[in-house]
Length: 283
Length: 111
Image: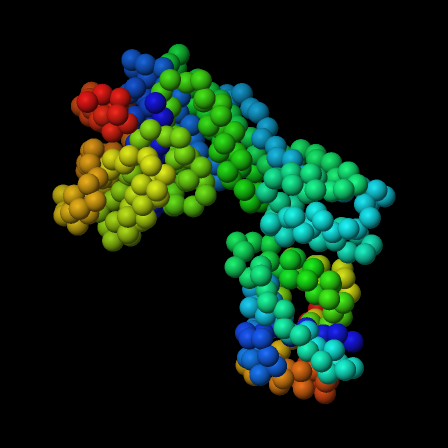
């Protein structure tokens, strides 16, 4: 079973929910936690350990100017404008390249070959015998997060229970993270921005066919608009976490509220059970 | 010589388009014969890489000068490599106004 934790608005508490959920589940089952916020991963702050590192590379074309006869077919094929053919040379923009491999295939002279270029890395740590943390990290300055997210998720493909911590927003990285998941927890806060972005995120999950449950974080008890929204859109509210300085203190020190509070451990265990219902695993 | 003016429409009476890569039309004018041709920019709505695509289009039409309002970094690189001189026109007029300014050497070179 794969559960994604996403949000829409940033800073609502995705990582807090994902980390605590994974910790609680690992008390009784094997679980793999995947940090898919590859531009700004932070789960490792809660599970510090020396990681095993693998590079993530993507193939980019290299042009043999001796063999090339400037026919321009590669540039014509490229959907991303990454190749421009001039009479005396080829201009290649690596940040526009999406590594589709098409230019190499259409070249009639075989003047293009591919070479791998590093764009990031994936690290693995084992905070406990039952918990594995996989972190995807995109190198600074590299524009495409999705291949790194794919590589991180790929490393979890044999795991029975996977929890993916998504990036904020609703762009390509979030879509890549949500794809193939059996359920999605959307973490929100009861503010106008929170609600606006929850709406967008719910639409994306719906479009991808991933069932959604909502966690309202930092609640001040005035959640009427959010609750009305969830009711209208048939979104189950799975849990409400109060706005509490004590929780923030634990979180800010890299701690998990479930580690120190049996009550929170119980509540997150219940969250997991409700996720299983959402994913259709139990009735 | 053949010059290009970025345009919002397909005639010389259309307003000038300030953007290069996402201009709806490229007006190609032969300064010797006075003839003009409107090329629809089929890459205008692409998510990215429009600059190089537009520049390649100009190269294919043997354009040697471009009159536009704003040219992005990637397009600039291609245009400079191809030896196409860029000129700036931001007066908000029509294509024929920009053409007249160019003919009278009133336009500033851009890079």
